[in-house]
Length: 176
Image 1 (cartoon, rainbow, N blue to C red):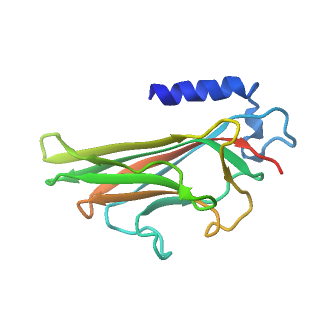
Image 2: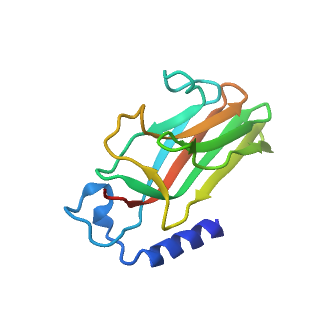
């Protein structure tokens, strides 16, 4: 938690004045490098695929480009909580970028702990990666989602247990 907060403060101070209107294509022109952020929430059930694409059986969320310009990702973070009733839960999570070498965060795993009077087990996991502020990880604009998307892979059990999570991205616009 502290590591992420310090990294965000350093990136903000390093990048100068933040022009929030540049994020998501609101401003007509770039002024100074801005640090933008966006969060995507998702939920689902363990072992129940959400997408029809081949080999996407563990993809909990996939998002295509949201900016009109290419971006450079500075920080990527994925958080997932699994709640199971009557049996211990397990969760494995990582975030990917199909435009690059796919793996955006390291895979993280957690085993559920008993919580509550009704036999609930909760497993919570956080996967995060910081990229060099002067380089970042590229992500294009204007590509079809099958060709360029960010995603979160969630493998969990027991089958049918519910999960909820988020994908948070801090980035800079990267005009051509």
